[in-house]
Image 1 (cartoon, rainbow, N blue to C red):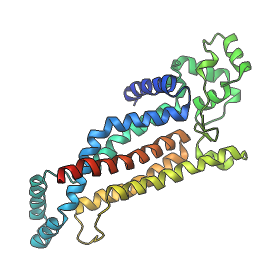
Image 2 (image 1 turned 180 degrees about the vertical axis):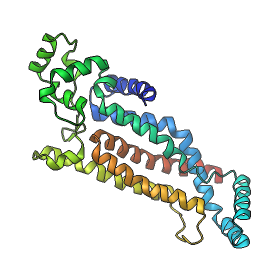
Image 3 (image 1 turned 90 degrees about the vertical axis):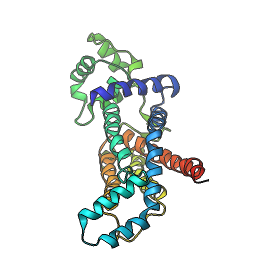
Image 4 (image 1 turned 135 degrees about the horizontal axis):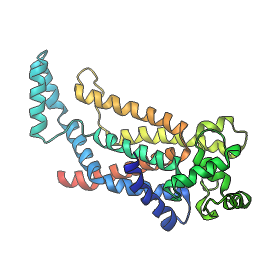
Length: 286
C-alpha cells in the first residue's frame, strides 16, 4: 500500500504541520474531512441509488411473486427493472470497498508516523530503532520510538552523538485533548495500570455505535420482511452488518488513532447523509 500511503502521507504531514499546529488529533480530523470531500461524489451517487432501490421494492416483490421458482427469469427481470430506474443494487457496498484501502493507508500512516508525518527516511528510523532497542518493546515500534524521543533531551543527544541526523522537532505528542493517547492501542489499556490510558477504550465503542447509527440513518425505510427481501439486498445488508464488527476488532487492536479516524468519518457520514437527503434528493423530487 506504499504507493497510496506516500501521497496520503504527504497530505497528513502538510495538515499536521500547517493547519493542525502540530496537534495530532486535529490533523486526523482534518485528514478525515479531506477524505470525505474526496469521496463525496461517490457518496452522493450511493445515497441516491440506495433511496431508489428502496422505492422500487414493491415492484421487485411483484416480480418475485410473478416468477415464483424461475430464478433465471427473475434475475433477468430484476436486471431490466434496475436498468429502467438506473439503479445499482450494489452501490451501497462500493464506497465501503473503496474506503477499505484508505483505511489500510491510514493504518500504515499512524503505525509509521516517523516516516509519513515526520518524513524521516526508513534508514534513519531503522538506525534509531537499533540504537534504542533495549528501551523498545514489541508492538508498534515507531510509535513507541516517537514516544521515547518526544521531549527527551537526553535521548535526542544520544541519537545526535551516534551520528543519526535527527532533531527534537521530528518527534511529536500523540495525545489529543490531553486525554487520549492516540498512539496506544485500546487493547493495551487492559494491561496498563495508569488511569490515563483507560479513556481509549471509549474509541472503539463509540466507533461501533456511530457505525450502526450511520447505517440506520442511511437506510431509514429498510424493509423488515426478510422472507421477501431481494437476495442482492440481503447480501448487501449482511455485509453492512458485519463491517462494523470487523472494524471494531481492528480499532481495538490497532493504535487508537485509527479508531479515532473511523469515528470522525462516521460522524461526517451522518452529516453528509442528512445534507444529501435534504438538499440533493429532495430537490430532485421537487
